[in-house]
Structure formats: C-alpha cells, structure tokens
Image 1 (cartoon, rainbow over the protein chains, first blue to last red):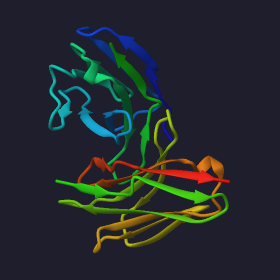
Image 2 (cartoon, rainbow over the protein chains, first blue to last red):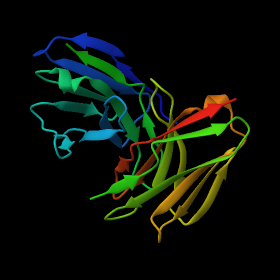
Image 3 (cartoon, one colour):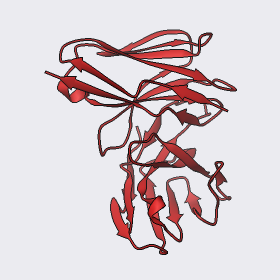
Image 4 (tube, rainbow over the protein chains, first blue to last red):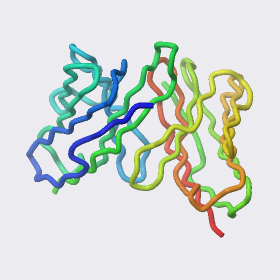
Amino acid sequence: SAVISQKPSRDICQRGTSLTIQCQVDSQVTMMFWYRQQPGQSLTLIATANQGSEATYESGFVIDKFPISRPNLTFSTLTVSNMSPEDSSIYLCSVGNIGTGTDNEQFFGPGTRLTVL
Amino acid sequence: GQNIDQPTEMTATEGAIVQINCTYQTSGFNGLFWYQQHAGEAPTFLSYNVLDGLEEKGRFSSFLSRSKGYSYLLLKELQMKDSASYLCAVRGSYIPTFGRGTSLIVHP
C-alpha cells in the first residue's frame, strides 16, 4: 500500500486569494490524481497529474483555475486560484499504479478541507 | 459517458446483513470498486471486481454482473463502526468514476 500525506490538512482563506496543496507519496506511483468532494457529494475528478508534462483536466476544470505540478513520481501540487466561496470543499490527492496490470487499487490521501470566506 | 446509481441511505441493525446495490451504464468497463468513507476521512479501498461473480473478503463481499451492469456490496455481522458512506466506482478506461455514495447507518 501507499502512504499519502497532504499539506495543509485544512485552511480558511479569503476570497480572491490562492492556496497550494501539496501531496507526497512514500513510494513511486504511476498515476496521481486530484479530486474534489463537496459537502454531501461524491468524489469529482479534477485532473490527472502527469509527471514532467501538463496535467489532463476533466470537463469543467481548467488549468488557469487549478494549476497542477508533478515534478517527480512521488510529489504533486494543486493550486486553487482566485478562490470564491464555491471552492469550499475537500480536495483529495489519489495515487495508484492503474493500468500497469500489477495493481488495481487506488489510494487516497487524508484530504485538505478548504473554506473560502 | 458514465452513470452510476446507488441508494442514498440505508439503515440496518448491529449483527445483521446488509446489501448495497450499484447499477451503472458506462461506455467501457475496466473494473468496479467499492470504497468505505467515514465522515471527515478519506475513502479506503474495500474491493475490486472485473469478472462476474462474488469476491469475498472477511465480513465484506462484492458481486458483479457485467451483462446487467450491476454490483452489490454485502456486509455481514454488522458492527457499529460500519456506519459510513459506501462508494461504488466504475473504471471505464483508466480512471474510476464515483457514484454519490450510500450512507449506511448501523443502530443497536
């Protein structure tokens, strides 16, 4: 299994500011993802973080709003830019070696609880 | 596109058995996952099915019928700590799409 840490665990931010969330994994993984989970809702995939190249964004999410970095196989960041109260949510990092045929399990980090005032 | 349906909420009694159903329509199929999520915590992996049939893992079992687009999660000998949200997720290609989750309440 993979151990995932996220920083910060929670934050309260002002409208119009930006927050960068870090995700660190204890082993090299093929795939890293960023999800959002709004109160009472299920998980919505924001993007796949690609090592050494631009992230792949899902419909409804754009790079200007959610820039993502993945400089190596164990670390990624998600920035929530120009925040509004609608961005208040839990942001989850997820990893796995999906597609390699060796492991189908997808692990989740503890999440970052963001409140925008 | 993908569409995943599961009941919003279920209640059951401690010690009993409960079955949580999940139906799906997807453009492709590369496996179905069940996750458990306690309030305020991250989802944790429970099971993975890619072939038809029943997979048993302790008190939890998961069933898949690909032809019917149907799965269920069976929880036996329910404990109070099983109160949580149970998420069904279907992988069409590489990345799973999650259902809205079923909130299970176990009462004494």
